[in-house]
Image 1 (tube, helix red, strand yellow):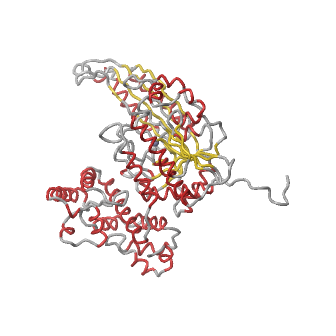
Image 2 (cartoon, protein in one colour):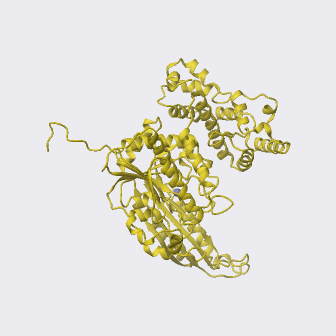
Image 3 (cartoon, protein in one colour):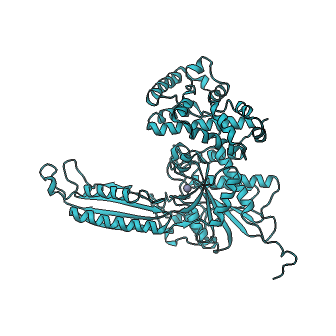
Amino acid sequence: MITIQDLNDCAAPAFADILRGIYEHSPWIAERAAARRPFASLAALKLALQEVVASATQAERLALLRAHPELAGKAAIAGELTLESRGEQAASQLERCSPQEYAQLHTLNVQYGERFGFPFILAVKGPTGRGLTRQSIIDTFTRRLRNQPLDELAEALRQVHRIAEMRLNALLGREPALGATVMDWAEELSLISDSDAGLTCAYMTPAHQQTAARLARWMEHAGMVVHIDAVGNVVGRYAAAHAGAPTFATGSHYDTVRNGGKYDGRLGILLPIALVAALHARGERLPYALEVIGFAEEEGVRFRSTFLGSSAIAGSFDDALLDALDDDGIALRAALAAAGHDVDAIPAIARAPGTLLGFIEVHIEQGPVLLERGLALGVVSAIAGSSRYVLELTGVASHAGTTPMGMRRDAAAAAAEIVLLVESRCSGHGSLVGTVGQLEVPGGSVNVIPGSCRLSLDIRAALDAVRLAAVDDILAGIKAICSRRGIDYKPWKLLDADAAPCAPRLMDGLGAAIERAGLARFDLPSGAGHDAMRMAQIADVAMLFVRCGNGGISHNPLETMTADDADIAGQVLLDFLRNCYIPQGPTPPGRHE
Ligand SMILES: [Zn+2]
């Protein structure tokens, strides 16, 4: 079996020769990467090969794409595939297509080639490496045919790198076993759902309770002492090497949005369970007790109240929420009682500030930044604060045919100007983002000038001062737009939440672990809220983001990641946990204070 050491030590032509089959008919990639040796790890080698492609000419990249065979295309039928491609296409049983599937793939191949000018490329061994089904290949093909050409070019190159990644694994005899376990567990949990179609796991439904029970069972098997607390958090504790040692915590949420993704939240529970199982199997203990927490509720789907699980642990649970009703008129209090929980025990869940050594949350990025940079992992610098408003604009509804343009007071036209104001004010200021996600003309008609318009504002930034300055400017701009147009407006503030910065000490610990894995540290803010925000009220927090596939889509069944990324995240998290806290030993001899 070939090792990284062999690849570092051999002559450049031998290096290029060994890696000949990694990128389809494109030996120049390995030839150029040879000069970048030595590689600290397999991850570093993969990254170097990707960088060679990124710094090649556009013509070279297109040639790389065009060197790939069509899926179940002419070359496959004629038996002219490379050894690697043949094995991969066989893993998805593409050679066993029905005549109908062949016809479908043939049509897709033709349409795709005409639209993009290169063949459709998909890592058919999929996110786990075990092969996609023919149906999911056809679905992906159909979906990607609708992509914009530049986006599809980038996606095709990412698929080429994913294929190369799996070929390298095979060449070096590496299997992302821990990552594959995590992917399998996520798949298994995704089958426990409130609905028959897709994954929905809303707070305290039967599926939610069953998910908690499954997590508890896995935690026990991994060697943890487990309890489910009064709000449904599943808490597993892996004892420290020595009694009386402090506690470090990690975790994320196990509830989901309606028809959500399999990894949002769950990755941050399953990955540490898999790590603890590995530690337990070799009898290794950490210098502190490690708690893995599956937070019961973060998404706010059923009772419109987010962070129920982590706010209970942070001691900021709002008792008034117990009277919140779901769509069927069931109170949160009653839902908890029906599931066998004692609401009077909720205050006792709270941890006193400073009792935890720290908290780290692993989460998929839920955005495209890491994906577009070709990075598996990122260190979160801060969880963005957010301001939310609803605006009601009132103009004059009048006849669309008889009111001259200069005599109108059009509420929707004012709203349109506001949308563009938000876009321009929030562009180009780092982490600042602004969105008008709701925009409606209540009771509007095709032949009536809009007399009223409702719209929402959502402004976020990692720095509170940046966000608040943008909010002030936008509110002033709205005032000016409305007075110029003769529109009355009323703003309602819905939310004003401060940003939660991550602890620099823990960020540096994560960054160092990423670098030790042979990857580059990259810091980014989180635009989405996470349980770590609540935990920041009582402890130092950090977050590790993991790359999201499919353009970074989340809160959607298309949300995806790979076993390799889960695996490297596990390696980095374990390295971080081993090094983030060095207990104070006895005072060294000769030093007495
Ligand atoms: Zn989440």
